[in-house]
Length: 607
Image (tube, rainbow, N blue to C red; front, side):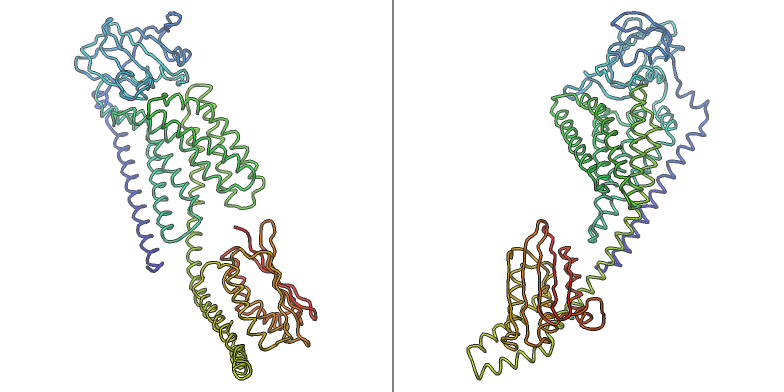
């Protein structure tokens, strides 16, 4: 399929994706706008917040304290807590009561009679110690302000948020579930659309990069990782337990998915950043990547088989995460000091900003028990904005590279025929056939051998047309020997050929040696009185193989153009340079001294 057609179709799909994304975001904004304009009195009739006033106490000391938000924050994530008091208004029979729990078990008593309980006994996941982050609801049998309400909490996680009980106190509602859901969505009117947008942009980038890879474009792995990171972060932000458990009752499944994303996002972020690093900081990042990958796999296995409560693994991960932030920030700062590329500087700078804000958010959580989403989101949105600009620039550059590669591929195919013709010059054909004809009369046996060598030489040139990859050096050497055997028929003792081959087990592009050897004979040896010697040698160095073709011909001044130097730069030699660079990252260096000869060094990196 023509690349222009493919690109046109891809661009149409891209526009369709942007169109549907815009429609979806517009729809979400309109829904939130409608929610915001909802009549407060009507909403109040369907949902009202209730308050519990009284005392609280822990089972450890039994001391009764005033029940308020300040006291609960001071108590923090204690293992057992009892709230005793009265609701500030009546609750009719069959009215639905909503309570928000954060990884705790709860028992609700009305005048010392158990009316509701929720906890690990409600779950089917083995060894899970709590019911996760969830809204619970039950129907009242009729509660008056005079009824004593006792709520008993059991917290199995010492590292639970210090705000867990104050969150519960502020999220007591009576009324309609759908109205509660809309109220929670309204409270997140910025973060939810932003999360949807980030998720969809990540998916669009994944689709676009995948399509470009199927079109043969290369160097897009880091963009694919960034797309996965965006989609993962958007989905993780969307899993907000303030409203997600009102939509789906399977709180444990959402809790596990949130944990997997929480453990996976640092891996994707480090993988993406690693692609831009070249110093020793890259090793530090890779160390953390493998460490986090091990933690992620351990979480999935231990939780899936009920060996360990996965929340305990997350608690350990939360301790490790600040260490990762510190070392990642140090590695990024060190890398930035040495960076000279604008694209790399932009990526690493935004990553450093994101790392610092994430670290600040984590430190805030450790000190206050309340994770500030705004701190995290601010740094994250800066990171996403800059990265998406970088992604668009790199995508455009990748398309240009693919387009240029297609053009160069066509030019290379066209040049192959020219290259072959340039290696079989009419004068060479005429001279070779004339020598063979004379040998037919004077030495038929030698003529027979020469004709076989001539046939092998022509076949070697024809085979080069289908060689798009490097070939064994021995095969190229055999082709050169066939060529030199024919030239020896002409020059006889005027041409001497020597070989010093220390290594032959490597690969080079087809027709690399023959054009250089031909130049040595045609422009060097044949023009020197008394002839000369062509030496072909190979040697192995630490990171490369060096091929040397030297002659004791007339030489030339490499600084001059349009003379012998210009002749040596014809399309055959130019193709040698191009194919060396393209097929094996090789290079070629020519040096010459007039009257003494020419030396050509070819450097082939080891793979």
